Amino acid sequence: MKLHGGLPEPMALAVAAALAPRPWARARILVSSFDLGALGAVRRLMPAQPLAVVCGWPPGDWPEVLARLRARALHIRHEALDEAILARARADGFHVRVYTINEPQRVARYRELGLTGVITDHPPLFLDDPGWAAWAQSQAE
Image 1 (cartoon, rainbow, N blue to C red):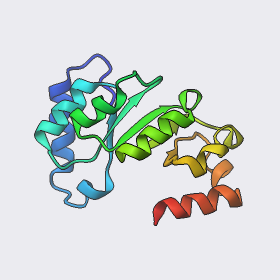
Image 2: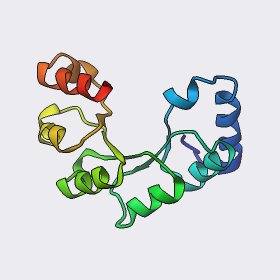
Image 3: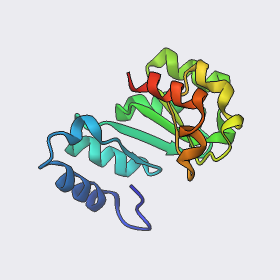
Image 4: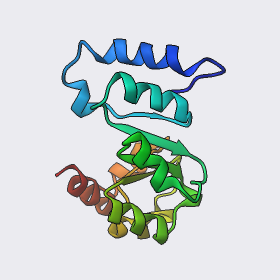
């Protein structure tokens, strides 16, 4: 969700209205935002909806922020990713995805350390690479 200057509550209401008639959405749609207020509003309206917190560089208390929102995932800039974030996420049961990564080699070493996914402008860079394809398949299982 990107508010573009809007208020969190109306955005959350619109998201809830769009997802409510689609029962499959609870398991297949992950609502993510930089705006913690909007995520909190979605959580109040849709207690079971999967959420992800998006931030460029995670604050020191990111695990507590995710726990308060009952969010499942942290989405961060690929430059912010490190082993400590992945270790903490794994220990706390959170998923970590990086954005916007268009150079697979920059994050390849994190595949085996708990990285959950990548957000890219060029999916073939990952999908056409056998190593990344095998990793993606293992994430889907």
